[in-house]
Image (cartoon, rainbow, N blue to C red; front, side):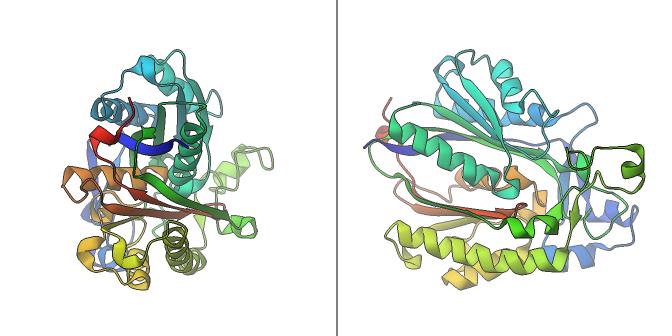
Length: 333
């Protein structure tokens, strides 16, 4: 059976930086409080004219350039997002039009912050089955548009960004194992109450702030600490590896304490854990691909290295992937 691997990566982030000091002027908080509890020091915020598709396009073009793939060669586009430009058309269709991949199928996927891992699973299985040869996977979100900037418990956490990769067939390495899961009974722990068919977005709902992220922080934190470790352990087991075989752990960048707990569970030293939460905060589906791209840029990953990606998100969902990073000569072009 053909194996699937990542051919190239790219990121797209807004220019505007919102620091903790800036937030001190907006809500009753402090840089020390935010940093000590989350590890976040700043985040990127989209300009008013920027939408999720704009960031997705930036990341997509860079990933295609990195993979040395032309738009005409892309035959499937998956965009993981909880902040689409609109309910429809799919943001993936806007990306398709933007890059000129006229022959590509395109759809959006909603799995919260786990979205990129879910999309990567689909892309890898499509490539392995021979149904598609080059799949563009994008995780992109503009969480600033659904954040209540007067709620100090949530507004310090989120930022905007996009990360993308091109998935294609490889001779060896690539995706070794995947593990996805969900617990829908916890859906109300992290959600947006209004704006769907259950509760349309009325003037009354907006006055009550139901168009924004609502999170039961302590409960989500406890879930995340448990599931990040569990998912990582399981995907490593499925790959036939041990924790000591992992060269780099790339977790969802939501909170440094959650990342540290997962790393401790795996027995990983700090140099084996990639962290950029201090720069971007929680960018939802963009978090993992953005971190992966920066890890590669910083030469933290070399061909042959074993890399574990793991995330959790609204749903409640979780997902993990174990990869062996393939060299360019392993790509089946």
